[in-house]
Length: 176
Ligand code: S3P
Image 1: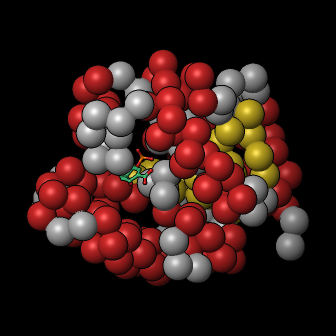
Image 2: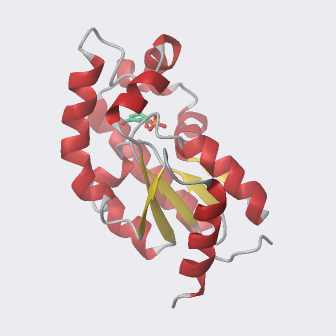
C-alpha cells in the first residue's frame, strides 16, 4: 500500500514528461506506476505505431478507453501516466476526474519541440509523418488545452519542481 490511497493521473501533451514525472512521483509516494500507452500495447500485443498502422485512430481511441477503464478498475492508489490524447475522447476526462487527482503537466510548445527528437517522433504516429512538428503541436494544444484545464491542478512542468508537485498532491489528497 502506498502513501496515498487515491490515484494520481498525469495528463498533458506528448513530451510534457508524464512518464518521467510519473515514475518520480510513484517512487516518492511508494505507489505503483502505470503507463496507459504500455497497457494498451500489452493488451493488443502491438506497438502504438502498429495499432495506428493496422487499424486507425478511432480504433486506437477505443483501445485507449478500454485500457483506462480497466486500469481504474484495478487501481485505487497508483500514479497513472495517460497518453496525450486520452482526456480528449469520450468522457475520459470525467472518468479521470472522478477516480483520482488529476494533474495537467503544462510545458510550452517550444520545449515540447526540443524534447520530441527524431527517435521519439517515430514512435508517435501523430508526429511521424512529414508535417511541421511546431504546426501540429500548436494545433493539438489549441484543441486539447480545454480538456487538460479540467484537471484538478495545473503544474508548470518547466518552472516548478517535483517537490512542489508532491506537496500540492498531498494537499489535494486530504480534500474530500
Ligand atoms: C498520442 C500520444 C501518445 C500515444 C499515442 C497518441 C496523442 O502518448 O497515446 O501515440 O494523441 O497525443 P504520449 O503522450 O505518451 O506520447
